[in-house]
Image (cartoon, rainbow, N blue to C red):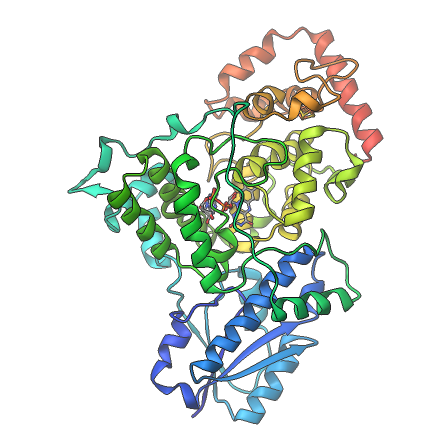
Length: 504
Ligand SMILES: Cc1cc2nc3c(=O)[nH]c(=O)nc-3n(C[C@H](O)[C@H](O)[C@H](O)COP(=O)(O)OP(=O)(O)OC[C@H]3O[C@@H](n4cnc5c(N)ncnc54)[C@H](O)[C@@H]3O)c2cc1C
Ligand code: SF4
């Protein structure tokens, strides 16, 4: 009997479960990596995402060879042909791999016709196992993030003093919403020069005649575990102090603020969430970093990241098709080309995504997703766009974040109210409005900000559904106060905008 291990592009860790299971038998264990030409044509991926994943795979394959594993690296038309040959040549009787995190990919692998059995090994990448998460949800009616996060703090003993949270509070979010001030000076991110392997991947991607998105160069992401560790250390030294305070702020040309930029690396497996949490916790005890920042980032990883994964795993495959508001509009064309919009906030952020594949949480949630929500874009269209455009995008994290959190398409499983906002929020949390042709204070008429007329139109269109959510009562009361003539003018302006931008 010969066991062969298939390493997927987002399972690049020496401690991953399939490699661990054959650790004592490296020399006799064939290991395969596959770049599938068919797979990368499924959607117009950001070119830097393709470079990141393939370069990280090629680097990890080299690392495994040095460790003595029998590595085959295939650039193939599709997975099946690559696996068939390798299985025959190596007389493999069991194909072993870590269970894929993404449902569509898991289904794809299960549908492959191979001449050996497939053994899926439960993943050890996330802190919560699927069974434990299921048990947690079974014990309650509502799956509130805050409850889950507190449970995680206790379960993994993070930032705890006995059974109480350090600092006497579980959450310091109130301190973490400071708007940007003029004198803000965020650190420059740690970037890397492409080495020979990465340069070769860039050449390969450029030579493929496939539909893609975004700029391929300059490519500055790390592609190895050692670089990912450097990014983490750099974050501690330069960003952690202010991470919490300016977590929600957006500033023109400051693409990353004090954010960590570690999502591409944790999502590939180059870093594990537990090690990141432990390093941050240790730094807090040793160097006394502000607790609002430390707790803030730990909540993102131990709370949000684990929660999103857990929710995705317990939902059936049709969660991705949900559409509570029955939104059917097309995605405005300018999401694919920033030069086509004159709305400064969207232009700045879309340009940044084209250049880097990155946007921080508030840019994603309160500008890119918010606008699609209030326009009434189909949740599946905006989800597809996010999936194509982002460097750290995978189905397991994209679907709950976009369908659940951003678009409220699940009707409130994940969030208690829709993240819909007018220009007022964007003006408060960014400097974008200062340099915009539109007036953030106007909701109708010439130069009125589209975020405003779409926001009121959204509330008006869905007031019956929104009434049931309780937390929307205050804004609905404001809608009621608006005179009907003004609402009609707003609706007329919405129609005009849609016709001009061909979304209807
Ligand atoms: C509409 C939308 C789409 C998103 N798409 C993705 C995606 O494709 N991939 C992705 O990894 N994250 C996604 N997120 C979550 C979050 O925005 C990113 O993880 C974060 O911006 C990554 O940048 P960072 O590493 O600098 O994060 P930081 O702000 O430094 O946060 C630290 C880490 O916390 C984790 N984290 C924080 N929030 C979330 C969250 N809501 N879900 C999961 N992990 C979280 C990430 O691992 C992140 O690296 C999305 C959020 C929204 C609202
Ligand atoms: S005025 Fe409106 S469109 Fe312009 S930057 Fe502000 S929110 Fe965006």
